Structure formats: structure tokens, C-alpha cells
Image (cartoon, rainbow, N blue to C red; front, side, top):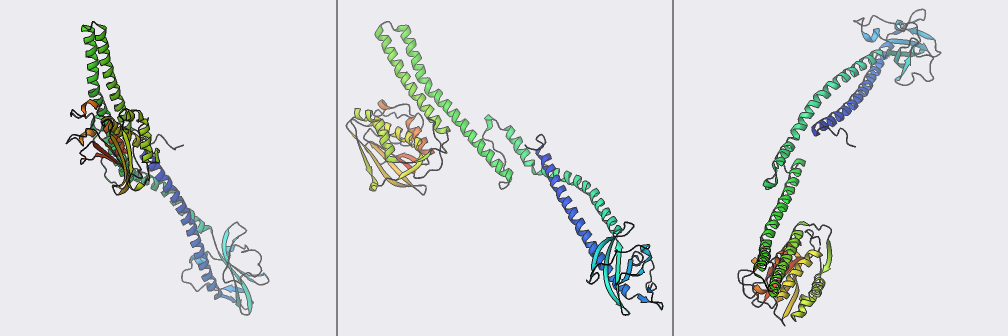
Amino acid sequence: MRLFPKMSVRARLTLWYVSVLAGLLILYVAAVFVFQYRLLEHQMIHDEIEDAETVEGLLYFDAQGKLHLQQNYYSHPRSHLLVDRLMEVRDLSGVVLYRTNTLNGQSLGGPTLPEEGSASSDARVVKLADGTRVFMISHLHALEGKELLIRLGYSIGPLRDRMLQFLLFQLVAMPIGLIIASFAGYGLAKRTLAPLDLMAARAEQITASNLHDRLVVENEYDELGHMARVLNHLLQRLEQAFSQLQRFTADAAHELRTPLASIRSTGEVALQEGQEQEDYREAISSMLEETARLSQTVDGLLLLSKTETFHAEEARTSFLLPDLVNEILTLLEVLIEERRLTVQQKYDGNVRRPITADRSLVRVALLNVLHNAVKFSSSDSVLEISYSRTTLRSQDGERVCIHDAGPGIAPGEHQRVFERFFTSKSENTLPNSGSGLGLSIAKLAVDRSGGQIFFDQAVSIGARCCIDLPLNWRGGLRPNF
């Protein structure tokens, strides 16, 4: 579950920034506190060792054999090393030979430990009878033939007080620093997200009437620039979808108007003038012909629309192009037999290589081209289908060409035949002309498959339509049949 869902992104970023900073500061203060405490402990040991070496030179026995410490060697009587010093000198049997007044008669460190003072600096923390904790070192020293154990220490109280003051100062300064950091972090987040506000404001102004507008990409290398590019691509796809929808609506309105008007006028004339049964039969026959044309146009428009809009990311399969052509020829077998056509298939080097693409799209293209070829072929003619290798945009590809023996294509119309609703005005092709959508659908399907379709203009007899397809196509759209 997301924390603080009702907070703005700036506020959440600032909160996370301050939280992380607070955690880092706590770790930093703790580390500095421990480091400083250890450093002061080390310094205290160093001072005690130096003080112990000084004391060794100041100890002496009087005439009665009592141990004393010279006190007249320093010029500042209030020197803290001397005033704060806690010292006790024993012999090896544990008898106390000297004790400073600062101990107030208390034992420094308790009974003598085995091997105590034999190390160069035997340091440890001890507790006096009054509860005072002392950092103490022990050291063995020979004086006038006697082995003495010198214990010297300082109270830990001043060190702890100073460290507590340092910690208190850090705890007071930390919230102030975090408050300042929160304002700075909020300002930084606001400045960082300012382009996002501009993008949002720009996006709010984009409607269906101005889908051609795009968001400004200030820096294409950062995350916001990437988001702007993604949104621009989305707007581009939306614009294409709206354009396709508008074009489909316009095409449908244009093509449906004529047959609908013809059906209406035929019916009105039949009602007004038709008196004989034969007149009604003729009117109904004309209406059925227009209805068939209308149904063909609607089916073509729907197929064209589906080919434009449906995706096929998972529809890619490997298949042999001749197998697909044979499947379509079986579908058109009745029409081929009616025209008494002879189908001949030729292979360049007899090499059959599988292609990887959306099979349904390729089938749509081939079905429309083959249907056109059969429809326009002369009776008792040959329909030639050839396969060969080709190169398509530096990729290996497969080419299939369909050559019919029909009236061919008029000069200047080899490209126009792929336009929507284009029908040639040639008297040779006019009787077999349809809605003018077949080759448009074929071209769109081939384009979506990464290929190309064209008519060979060098052919003088009939028409030769060639389709080039890459062997491995990784994109495209697929109609939803």
C-alpha cells in the first residue's frame, strides 16, 4: 500500500528526502559520537602515561622510609593534571605507600591484580567507593631498590559531561537542519517537476480538434523527456486513429450514398409507375444488385478498418508462401473452373524458404490479388504464379508474382489502382470492376507485413502483380476475423 496517497508528488519526495536525510544524520551523529569518545579516551590514556612518567621522577623516600611526592616543580598550582590526578602507590604485597588527597581515603582500583602493571599501559575503568568512575592505568616502577605499583587515573565524569553536551547540541541542531533541508528539498522537487506541470498544462489543451499538437521535450535524455516522447507517440497514434476513423466515415458516406440513392429511386419509381408484375420484378432485381454492391462495399470497408486498427504482436508464425497460395487457389477453385483457367507455378531454383509474419495479413493480400487476377483473366487462359528470392531493405525476402492474361492496366494507373475506391474507366475492365477496395486492402496488409506490392509496368499482356515479403518480420497489425 502506498504511503500518504493523498499527498502531492512534491510533498512525498520532500518527505522521503527528509526521512532519508534524518536517518543519515542519526547514523552520522552516532558514528561521530563514538569516534570522538574513543578519541578522547585514547587522549586520556596518553595524558595518564605522560603523567605517570612525570610522577616516577617526583617520588622519593624520606629518612623514615615514608614515600612522598614532590609538589614544587610546576609553576601553575591549579594545573588540572595535578589537581584532578588520582594516584595511589603500593608495594608488591599490596600495602599502600602513598595516596593523593583527591581520593579522600578511598582505594583506587581495589586489591592488586596478578601481573598488574607489567604491561606498558595497563588501562581499565574502575569504580571508587563513592560511585565515581575512573579511567586508571597501572605501572610498575623501581625506586631505591624497591618495586612499586603506581596507579594513576582521572575521573570519567568530565569526559561524559562534555560528550553529553556535544550530543545535546547535535540533537538540537538536527531538527533545525531538517526543517531547512525540507524547505530546500521541496523547492528542489518543485523545480525538478516544473516541466511535468508544463506537460500537464499542455496536455490539457490538446483535444480531438488539435491532436496534431505535441508536448515540448526539453531534455530527451532524462525521465521527463522520455515521458514526453511516450506521450507524443501516444498522441500520434491517437491522431492516426482519429484520422482513420474520419477517413473511414467519409469513405463509407461517399460509397454508401450512391447505392442507397439508387435503391430509393428505384423503389419510388416502381411504386409510382410500375403496374405490371414484370415491372416490379425488374425493380426488385435492380434493388438486389445495388444491395449486393452495397454489401460488398460495407464488407470491404470493415475489412479495411480492421486491417488498420488491430495489433498482431503475438500472431507471427512461420509458413511457406506456396502453401498459402495453394490454400487460396483451393478457395477460388470454383471461379477458376468457371473461367477454365490453367494455373502454373514456377520456383526460382526450386528453393522454398519459410517466412515469419502474420499469416492472416498475408492471406488477405494474396486473396485479393488472386481474386482480381482470376476475375479479370480471359477464359481458357493461363494464370502464372512465380516465386523467387529478393532483397527488401537490406533483408532477405521472398517474392511472389501473379501474372494474368486479362486486359491489363491502363497507362498511368499502375499506382492509382491501390487508391481507395479507384476504378478504372477503361471499357475493358469496367464490366468486372468492383468497389475499388480490394487492392487497397492488399496494399495495407502488405505494408503492415513489412513488404511492398506493385504492378510490373513492363508487362504488355495482362497484368503482373508482385508482392515482396521479408523472411522475418517483427511488427505489424492484424485484422480481427
